[in-house]
Length: 380
Image (cartoon, rainbow, N blue to C red):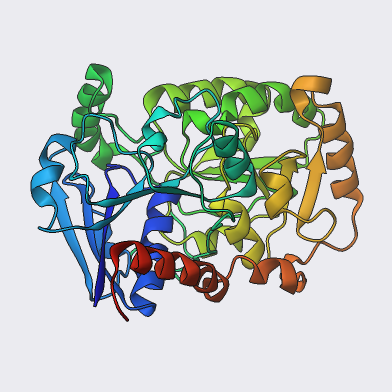
């Protein structure tokens, strides 16, 4: 039996962790067992329906990782570049999955890899410009709509905390300690759809999404259209939530924060359009392909990587980057959407959606596994 060591040291749950779980399932189907080395504070892994042959191995941090590696030569898949301080046996087959575009990031850590796999053509092109040894085709991802704990909420959504506390920051550590004390005093209402057009964020509220900058340009336009509501399903750090709230001030009475939701399928069923963030720091956007698979169209800036994941007029609509026109094209699009008699049906774009199916992902992985076998000289 072939084995791989996957390394994902993110303490918070996001698209990269969904991707890791799907990769474990796909590799298991191809006869490759995974030892998943993860951060000890990442308690969500056991709720992600990992295959039985995946071994979860929590560690305190990168400094503890070397001791967690099995003996002998190993195929290692690092989710993101492994830091240079990590001393690995030179006999290891070190590979990485690039979940982010190089965009203002240091490409040097990837130079140590025997191969780097990109999650989109956009990421791949950026890596190639820096001379990284890449796999020639993007691996893309899978629209995984299963409940994060393996359970369905039966369409019932309830407000949760919109904060995801960063323990590295004193302010966040203090607020994160205080929040459970105040939680019993808060009223957490169930979600109910409001009349009008519902736009939604379904994402972690991280800086790479640039939601505050995006809505600082779009909120004035939305303020002129009182039939449009904005719902936010996701959590983020204190500053991310604060800055997004400030950018949405012109439409504050039509914005609601719902926090992180386990059942994303239930979310997509109760909104009209998914809103993406700004494009250049985004790698793929698993929420885009999830929404399309659920039948929810997408609104996105017309730029990579969204031009790889959205089909204009079939699975969603593009608009001009609002940093170029202060949201004029977006406002024209909103007026079109309000006048539409029939909504888009993304699920009819079967060829496009098949590209992001689990079966297609497995097929893209087959030559990767064959390559790794040859490098490690493992017989079938």
